[in-house]
Every structure is written in structure tokens, then in C-alpha cells.
Image (tube, rainbow, N blue to C red; front, side, top):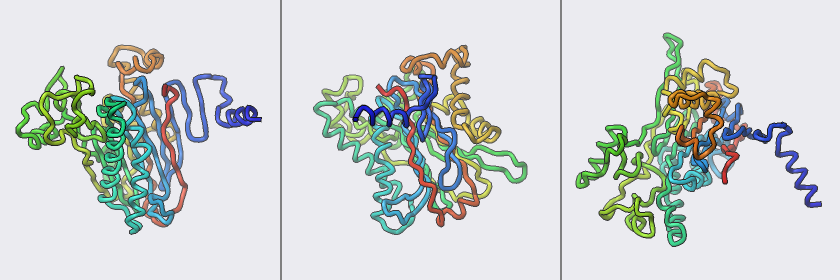
Length: 382
């Protein structure tokens, strides 16, 4: 009886495709190292989502949630998008994927005001950082290397015609906005980035650590914080935030010679607020893997000049074609490179495109659907 039930559920879950590399379910499809959801509907428009894996374990995680933003189903209602670019391992990005939105819903319910705010979003980030820190503390004796795992954390929240963008690290949110006079669609970057390659970020680090001449180091033509990491803000990376986790048994390459007197990295997100208008067409949320190969305007042009269906997958393909071109190889050959080895050609790439129907944006406070809860997946998690 049990084996019959298992066979039945498998038949519902798996596609009947004869291609063993392709799996599909009700929320997305997988083809080799690529996962994609070509088109879906959120509260105020369409969306498209795609992820391609390069690391041995997928370190990018992402999600889209649409409907109630509170544990109280009375609202507020809106759409949440998260892109979490892990480094050092997948543990932090997976934790954020499991907890950031839940923390947001819990805090919104506790507030009881039925509205969204910058403070609620910031507190959701704080709760997520504290939650991961508690796991590091608990597992320190058995898994000390967890202290050296972290993640960028980009979140976008659309609620009552207002867009909130919160970011730690170097993932990026870009808006496609129509210029009324010409009709062209311009790319507007909405997220502040925290990468040591940016001079203003290096200046900020020097101002926060005036007594440390080695706070940023140029190594192999790459600026790194303490010579170790490129970003200055993140969730996790506890070994650069608390002295008690920068010692044995942590690997020697992560241990600093001088004790940590104050946190070197920050978990305080940069948050911006934007009132959406009829000229705002779509949003592109993507991990740094995409922006290594496409400019903001190139990405916006691709979205504007192609069908919505499959547009996130098209952006991923465009980035992979650029990555192949840089290594003087064919795109078809790059697709054959296995995970792990693939990281020498490009990083994990996550893209979420959210289209904005202004007629729905302006009425969003009155809407109660559709409800969406979707996370990207990968076929190769072991």
C-alpha cells in the first residue's frame, strides 16, 4: 500500500518528459543546472524567476511572496522579493530564505498597525541576524567553520503603492522606468551596494576603523576587507563581527592577528523608499552573478524588448553567453561544464523580474490575491 502511494505522488510530482535532466512541478522547472519559473502572477502584476548553479552547492537562495505581509490575514497586503547570495557555503542564505520573511510577518503582526515601515523591515533583518548568530553559538563546538559562512541579503517589498528596498552586500535591484518625453525605458539602480571595490565603501570602512590601516587591502587587484572578503555588510560572517568566534578551532586563514575590538562587518541594511508611479514598468532583482556580465541598462533593455514569458531565464542566458565569450568558448560548451568546475566561469546567478501594473498598484490596498509563495530550487544539492 505504501509503495503504491509513493508511486502515485511521484507521478504527480515529476514531469512525463523523456529528458531525464528536466524535472517540473507546479511551481517551476529544472533543466540541468538551471531552475526557472517562466511566468506567474503576484498581487500587482506578473513575475518571472530563474537560477543557474555554478558552485558545488548552490549558495544563492531566493523567494517571492505575495499576499498578506502579516501573520494576521487582515493585512497589510503586498509582494515581497528576496535574493540571498551566500558565500563560504549555503547555510546562511538558506537560513535567510527560511526566516527573513517569517520575521517580517511576525513583527508586522506584533505592530498591529496594518501598515509597513522602514523600522519593521530593519527589525526583520536584525531578527534574522540574531537568529543565525544563535545557531553559530550553538554549533561552535561541533561546526566552528559556520562562523565563516555569510550571505548578501537583498529584499524588495511593495505595499500600498510604496516600494521598500533593503540591501546588505552587492546584489542589486534595478527599476525600468519610462521617460515620458521619449518613450525609452531607463535603468535606475535602487539598491545601495556594499563592496570594497567601491571607493565610498572603502572610505566608510576607513572612517569606522581609523586605527586600522589594513581594514581594506588590495590583493590580486581586488579590494578586500581585512584581505578576506569583498563585502562590508552581510548576514552571518560572525568571525568578522565577534572576537569569540575569531580563534581556534576556526581555520587559520580566517583568524586575524589582532583581536576584534569592534565589529568589522555590519548587518545594518541600507534601506530606501520609493513611491511607485505609472512610469515604473518593472523591477529586476539579481545576485552579483548577473551584474558581473550585464550592465543595468543592458538588463533593462533585454526585459523591455522581449516577451515577459521566460524573461528571467533570458537574462540568465544572456549573462552566461557573456561569460562564455570572455573565456573564448561557445555557450553550448559552457552549459556542459559541471557544477563546482563551473564556478571558474561564473558565479551562481539568481534573477527575479517583477512587472508592475499601475492600475493594480494604485488599488493594492483593496486586493486580496493571488497568494504566491515560491522559492527557487536546484537539482544538485548534494
